[in-house]
Image (cartoon, rainbow over the protein chains, first blue to last red):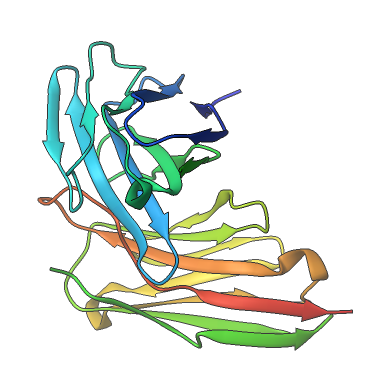
Length: 112
Length: 109
């Protein structure tokens, strides 16, 4: 089944404890992206990647890192999480940017 | 950047009723999608429709790119249609989808 998977789906952590949210797609897509969704602020892009080893900042990149070493994986790294990073996170992928984007199931992160 | 406006912000329907959701955008785009966010938070793809008309069961969508708007039609609504409907548009660069604020739909039985 063609899909975007994220892990974990739910995570409660404490300030400063490094964490990684994994994202994987099995559709051989070139483009991948991370968004966060917050009440009143909607969905905002964090980072995106046009291809392997090519990443760029979105609207809210502060406090996050990404890497794209393989086409299928695009992990989101929070090296020192803070409470303002409590949010619902989505990974998305598409063949190229202008094609239909498919979203993962979301990761609910709470930073205490 | 591109602005996306969705209307209405809230909609309450009786089961079986029809509805039209609207998405206006401020610039030309090469990507337009409609999503349904279910009560569990998942974003479900409804349509990829940068132009033209598509239908999928009780749902259909039309995008008039030259006039910068898109419409989502829901016919014979069901309680499972409840949730938030998002329109998202994009044109690269910057390579991101810009989401509207959404329409909250409640279907009552």
